[in-house]
Amino acid sequence: MSSPAIVITTPLLDSLITPDTLAERLGTKRRTVDEWRITGKGPAFIRIGRGVRYSPEAVDAWLLSQQRTSTSEER
View (cartoon, rainbow, N blue to C red):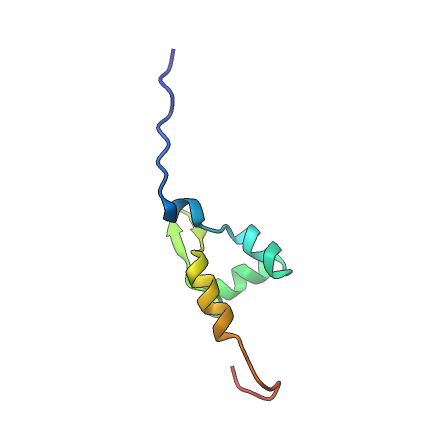
C-alpha cells in the first residue's frame, strides 16, 4: 500500500487564480490573458514551475489601474 499524498495548503495557495479562471471571470479568452502576461500588460503573476497563477490582490490592483475617465486617455 502506498501512503497518502501530503497536501500542503495555505491561505495564499488556496486563493491563487488560474489563467483559465481569470479569463472566464473577465469575459475574455485565455489567449488574451496569456498575451497580456507575455507583453507585461496584465496583472502581476506568480510562476510555479511551468504554471502561472495570479493572486486576487494583484488582479484587483491591475483592475483598478485600468480605470479611465475618458476613452481618449493614454494607457
